[in-house]
Length: 530
View 1 (tube, rainbow, N blue to C red):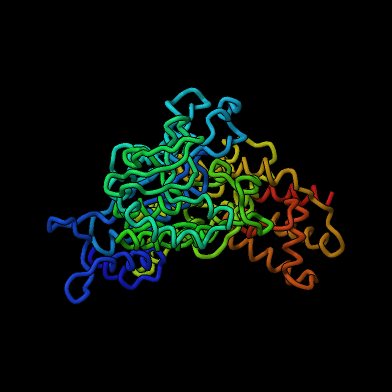
View 2 (cartoon, rainbow, N blue to C red; view 1 turned 60 degrees about the vertical axis):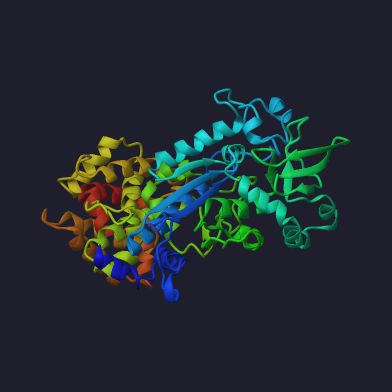
């Protein structure tokens, strides 16, 4: 671990860059970084937070944020050896603003608009409230992917009094907070805005009305509720804060040290940081990450439905390949669609194989180090995902065992027990082929010099020794292309892909022929020439 710590201090991998910022957050004598103090002379855990709005189900953005935060958390632990905590915070006291279009009992839900989400009945009729249902889905979601976290409910914190001390501080510095927020609002909103949203004693609604502070020390405020003037305490669940103020209050009350968020929340982070300073604390450290784009380069939106769900990725690729893709270049916008999955899978396994031969500094910069928290699996797979997709493509209506039988021709020791990753990948490849490749396959007839080149390839394959390996076959393919009169080798390989595989792109042909078998490949050539 000592060697790892030394390498971590110089690593350019972004989780270590974030961890170094965090390590400098607390300083002792002469400005030297020290562990977070617990107030009793000991070390307090560095507190990481991710936020979640429980008005909908968890999605790939939730996975993205918790995963990246966990990567920074592990990097910090490697760098310092100090303890950490990760809170998954559910903003479940927020007012219910809109009925989702994908849930049952919508008419019933519409009757509970503006109430705290924990006071809205569960449309699925399984849990105490809609928020309790979605919170359960969040915990199941995070547990499913093995995250280490502590769940925290906004409602429980408000009603249990955990935020009372900081709420009093919000009231005491109400004017300063208004000075920060009002310039960011339009004229109409300025007239009704209040950082504090009291819960109506009449309707239970979270009210967006002007509020007058009566007594900050006792938490007392005054507001109009349906024509009546009401004085009410904001403590112990009597009110909810507006989101930017709430975010800052939470940072202060919980002592949050690190929280990352998307580029779309940049301005919110600025305002919340100013409010945290007014409340006497520092804004947490954190990374502002770029948003995902669809295949057209447009921002992914839940309302548009142009994104890629977590379940969709896991239908066609592994969880580790998704984590690998998410890790890379978080400050750059990346496209997230079905077409990126095969390459992500293959690159993940390539980096995983390389990790075991690398020096420590290179290991710490390898994405798979952060995907696996430093415990990178030693086993690899004998074929690429791309090659597997091509195999499934030419096999047509094959079952999984037939695929395994072909793989054993290429790698005699290939079994599901020895290569569990490959076993899962076969399922992914068969699903991907079924849904995205098979509908587009179109084997064309060879033309011109392609015919003679394919005839020569068939002849060369017929004379191959049984001892020939993929590299021998690749040499034959390469030589035919060089001597076949093609303007460039790319034209020859494109012809092979389009006439034999029905696709404009394909694998390294020597490896494919070795995998699919010489006799089977000759049948493909005969069909193309026939």
